[in-house]
Length: 251
Ligand SMILES: [Zn+2]
Image 1 (cartoon, rainbow, N blue to C red):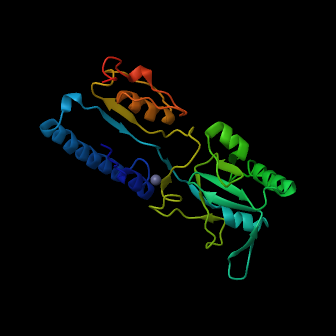
Image 2: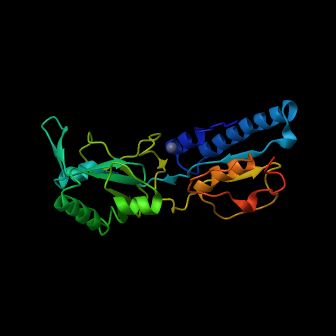
């Protein structure tokens, strides 16, 4: 059984990462989980059930919101018509929250691609924007298995989230509590920021009392498959042998 408890994510987008509201939401999730546990204890096969609690990302409190496409309008990479709609573009930003995917208008045009790359690289030295990296398509695929209709990935060294809207004429915008890209807190960054997520597992398939500092997200599915006596072929991750109880997992 898979249960998705997604309210902590929404509450963090609205109030921030560590607030009274997020603690209250964690208590609510704890009660919901308690109801599940007690129901399985009374009516299910509790002794032979494995329980796993996990998240797919943490969040970071947002300091500033950069209207990336207004910046690209100012720098001449996006041309707008009189109604303010996009007429043509050489570079357009698509926000993932804390990172931004930059789509080049004609990526087959080597000059255009280089101009966009040079401009993005120059933002590393901008004292407000402070980009920490500019990854191109090939680097994003090789390092993070990230691919799609974009040509660069950028992220700030500060806690800046990206807005990709064009309806605000300012370069810098306000946070909008609850918005998943520009809320009080958000996610969507490279996975080396401080905030990580949690993984807890207990039951006959797991060793007791094992603590590991870090794990890879891609190892979770093969681990859960092994607990079920299955093996996943052709996937990036591998089972976390250190937490699996070898005597029980194959049943
Ligand atoms: Zn979210």
